[in-house]
Image (cartoon, rainbow, N blue to C red; front, side):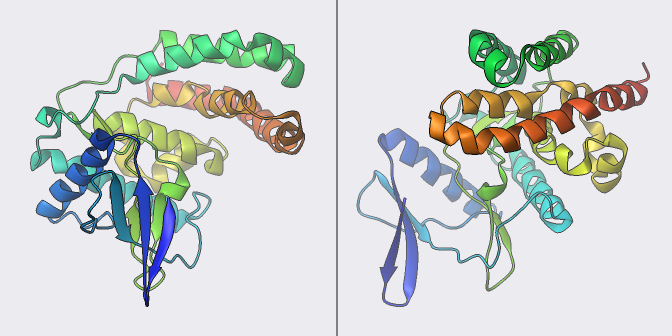
Length: 273
């Protein structure tokens, strides 16, 4: 992606390797614009079908899930996105694959086990075994989300895919490269995993702040998704990169593992177990 300055106007310009990917992005933006869903940065005409051009958004600060305002506004954007299923038949467009979160996490657990040697060395055998057990136990109890309400999912709800315009203070969601279709609950679960550490894994306070999420299956919060994702990312780093990354990751891991027993207890209480 490039920032392109033309006089007083700035644009972002992104080139795709496959036209089908660029066509998917254009389709998403055209459909959302057609139903008046003002949640994305508009696409502007460009001569090359492999390129996507959009106005450059100047942000006065980065969106952070540690900020209450950013959490609530980003969740509201996702709800708006998911509700477009009432106006747009995303399922029949042919542009999107359907996500299966249970299968995705099962594959993640398989990959996790493949890096046992690395994880035993860097994370430690005891913690590696504990995370493996948490993942195995939680997966065994997950009931697949109903497929009746398939809609467009953004696919990557990391904080930097939400941008706030400096001039208007309006929040937008960007970068639909991983967009797919699936039940809204799947994306809400993935967003919850990103946000829950900022609540110290206290599901009571979390749901008090975000009551619309009481409808999701809270059992999905028990899979150690963020821990596994970060440690698997660590396997891709060089020794130099690891030296700076591991201390922060170990602090994050220790905090999460300390909080997990209470999280399991709270979720069990909500589920009536």
